[in-house]
Image 1 (cartoon, rainbow, N blue to C red):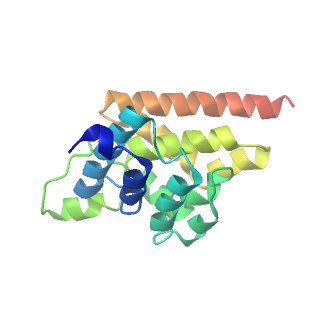
Image 2: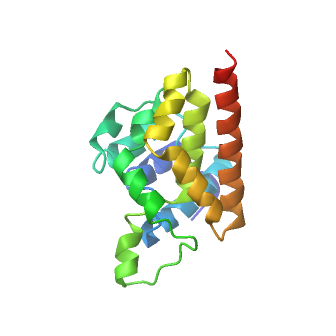
Length: 176
């Protein structure tokens, strides 16, 4: 594949239209391609309304409320029930064996490399104290906390960054 010619918004939109944000094998491959596109062209889910909508449309098949999310108000993308299940069933290693029952369950688990930046983006978009409360209510902050137990150092660093930003956001709203 010619990385320079094929790393464009149209390709990213096509990938986001199939991606479900899980640790399943197909999603891991799609995430690797998305990382390459981001590295080459600085394009990702947050680059435009079109890229956001491509993922939102796919994700709304699992979480109907996600259809109401936008780049300026992304909170509806995070589902309380699904996130709570991911907190309880967090896999510190993320390894799956192809063809096994564990591989099938991988598609039910969030990929922290994708979801932690989404939680961080929600923090950036928090414009009111109720937005921060919503991140607690949807278990998004719990998810960031549980990601601190990952065996993957990069995920722990991402999680730590989200939690530090969370603390700063809470302090800002506390002293207003």
